[in-house]
Image (tube, rainbow, N blue to C red; front, side, top):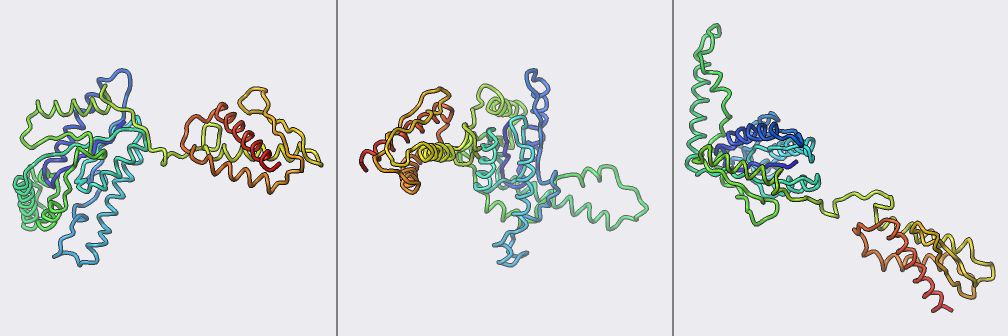
Length: 342
C-alpha cells in the first residue's frame, strides 16, 4: 500500500491532520472485508527527533556548520529508514513532517515506486501569519510551564492540565521558524513526485476533510489506484531464463562456440548441429569453412554479435522462445561470417 507524504509550513496543523487521517484510515481498514492492511504513522515525534535539528539560524550556527547541515541530514536518514522498513504493498505509511524539500519528496516517491506502491502528497494549507501565531502561542505556553516549574516547590503536585500543555507539539525557535518558512518548497502537481496532490486548508470543516480523505483512499486503495511499476534500470534481475538479457545472450553464444569446437573435424569443414534451445528437438545447422576454425576467431565473432545485440537489454520476453531466437540469430550470423571468410 502507498506512502502518504504530508507537507506544509511549520506549525500549520500537519500533525493534527495526520492524526485525523490516521483515524479515518483505521475505520476504512476495519470496514474492509476482502483485504486487511497495516497502518503506520511516522513522524519526528515517533522517531524522537527534536525540532532543533532543523535550526540553521545564522545567529546560532557558524557558516560551515550550516552548509554541512549534518543534524538535519541525520534526521532525514532516520525518517527514511523508518519508512523503508515498513513500506510494502500491504502497508499504508503516513509520513508526518515538514517534507519541505522537493528533492526529499522525490527520494520518497522513488522508494515507493521501487516497492511497487503509489505515493500521494497531502499539503496542509495555512497562511504564514496564522502559522506564526500558532508557533508564538506554543512558545508562550512553554515559557509559562518553565516559569511555573522554576517557582514551584519540589514537593508540590502538578496542577491539573499542566501535563496537557507539556504534551503539546514542540514549538520552533523564532529564527528557526523563519528559516524553515524561507526554505519551504511548495509541491507542484505537474511533477510526478508531487502528484497526485491533495490539499486541506486550516478552515476546512469535518465534511470537507472527509471528502479529501475519501479521495485519498480512492487513489491508494480504491478504483482510482494506478498500477505502479519500478523503473527498469532499478530492477535487479536474476541470472535465470526470466532474468538478465545480457546474461542469457552471453550464455547461449558461449554454448554454441563450445559446441563448434567439440564437433568440428580436424581438417575443417563439415556441418555442426546444435539444438535450437526452445524446448523442442529442432536443430540448427552451422556450415563451417574449409579450414579449421580456432577459438580466437570464434570469440571475435561472438563479441561482435553480442555488441550488435546489446540493445535488447531490459526486454522481458526471455523465456524459451527468446533463447531459441537468440541461438537461431547467432547461428545465422556465424554462417554469414564463415561464407564471407571462405
